[in-house]
Amino acid sequence: MSSQTLHLRAICFAIAGFTFWVLTDSAMKLAGRSLLPNYEIVAFLGIFMAMFISLYALVRGEVKELWPKRPTRLLGRASLDVANNLCVVIALRHLSLTLFYILVFTSPLLVAVLGRIFLKERLDWRKATAILAGFLGVVVAVYPSRSSGSSAWAGFAACVVCVTCFSVAVVWSRVISQTERAESMTWFSALLSAAVGLAGMLFHAAPLDSRLFVALLAMGLLCAIGSICIVVALRYTTAATVSQYHYTQLVVGSVVAYFLFNEKPTIWMLSGAVLIIAAGLYIALWAPDANRGA
Image 1 (cartoon, rainbow, N blue to C red):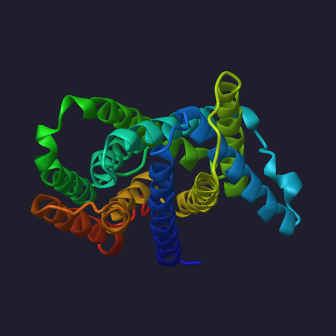
Image 2 (image 1 turned 180 degrees about the vertical axis):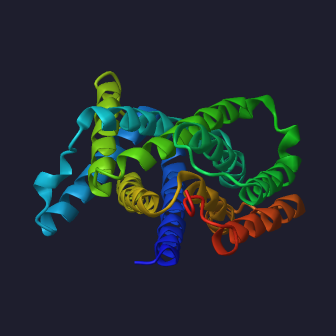
């Protein structure tokens, strides 16, 4: 299979994965409007993710292959996922969906730097310029939110943790995805999320109604599909390239936020989106793959 075909396949899986994550976050925001504790939402996220992945493996006759080959390596990545999931719940309770995505778009820049330092991935000036242009789009898009009140600081702090955990997890996934199956990595993270959340529920748990149950069920299914897509994409290209398509969430997230939460994008957000999309298209179609010639 040619490098161009592998690169295109990675792009498709990355965009699909981030799209499913937008839908996951939308379901999570709906659940966050309830009185459910943050850890209880994380618990059901892990439970339903593990359940759906197990059913998928059962249908394919691959249940035994869900257990990772090197569990200790996955434990660190799974811990990052748990912290990320918990902070996403907190952030979405304090911030609008649109603003949340604008803030987490700092992760591609961090992933590119981490990939260069730890994975020795090439980062030529053209790709670096495109990533910085995308980050400039984030700055432009976030400009109207500069006057947000102090009540949003918990959401901002949670986003910082989200970006850090996600970026480190993406770089680490690039290493372990060469030997571990995507389903195994996602399943293992789901189990740890369920365990941590259930431990919190031993002290306090809120009751579920039918609407909440459906939202949590959808959240687990969508997150499982999105996580698998991202891990598969990391098999075919670099962490920096995959992370670049995080920017597509701005478009999908704005549409979902408008129809579900009546959040309307401002002219600043639209202007920033132009820069973000242009940077993403350049990376996808014209920038040389960071692995080429390495």
